[in-house]
Length: 441
Image (cartoon, rainbow, N blue to C red):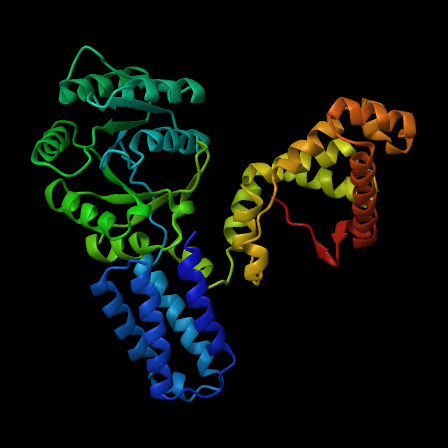
């Protein structure tokens, strides 16, 4: 996410951090580098101009110039201004006091509206809501089938009418269906076009008047950069939007759309779609994204992901096993699955502060997890509980059963034994891990 922009800004910030004295000339040279980095990232020129002016004005303040650490003060100002650019603070969905809450998704064709319907339904379902999706994209081939497939995979109701092309009729009937099924959230998937046209806009305006949505959410493809900003501005002008979701944000190395769209439309970014799975939808936290861009990490997002993967009881049980040296191969496999559930190793590394670029950008072969899974599941229950049983003949059998070599089995078992020893040495009295209590999720 934003790798290209992040690398350039981090290089500039790295030069500043240890600086004990900054002249106005040096500040202007630094800001020129920042300006070029933002423009290359396809950030709107007006947004860049205002951003640079704000950073310059605050950095030339007496409190900064006379500070013992002016470089760090400037870095702090850049982070604050980036956060403001992205939206200051997290903005949450607007839920109606009288259910159902109606969310209408709009955007161009290919922006990811239908997929977001599924992701948003999954996200709301985890929060205890009962969503219903309405298929109002009556033009794109297989759009209705796609939404129905998503609904089945999530066990979420979908209302559709393949015999009608009247989206107002379909939406109003769908809302009635939601009320009868006691659904408290309705998500309407609307049609898009390859580009904005009057027919599309008129249909969306008519739909808005008919269903009176509590939230109109624009879905924009972050990969389209400056064009995404133009699309957002036009939708906001004609239809009127309440919020924005950035799709494909995980693949966007520049970040121009995300850094421009809030300033241009004055509407908050509420979600970021960061993968292909239905669980790959994250609330948009401007301060966390700003920290990631500047290489300061995003530990809070890692904690959020860990809380989804673990509950308090599981964390306590894991701590107990580690303290008593009872961590088995079954436990190892379970932890690997939970880590995988948190996202790719690469995405987790990107959230950790202080990770060198060469490590962060290194290709990680996540298929090794499947290899480990095959090895462990080829063992008997007794072998997984007590690896000391693994003599030569057993290891040959496991190698054949998992499609690996005996050397692979030996290598994995050596790594597992080393990890057990490390855990034992790091655990001290009363559940302390390395002198620090394990977090309870």
